[in-house]
Image (cartoon, rainbow, N blue to C red; front, side, top):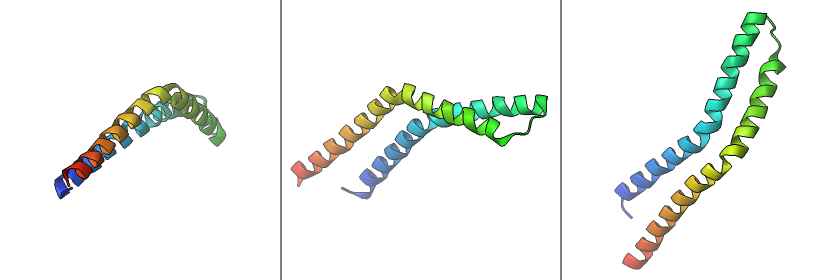
Length: 91
């Protein structure tokens, strides 16, 4: 395994991390913006009003996106394992 292989695997790992983390984070961002707009319009400045809907949204989105997340992780893991097996047979 040379430096180029390591850089390529690291780049793929970063993309997987962004794919997995981006889904709940974007949902939390959208709910946060909507709650902030509602708070600005109604002038209610309660901190838990923003916190609780975001937590619930993150939980629901994570549960709904779990099959997609598992597929992404399984594909990445299989690819890394195949590279490890390829290194073992090449040596």
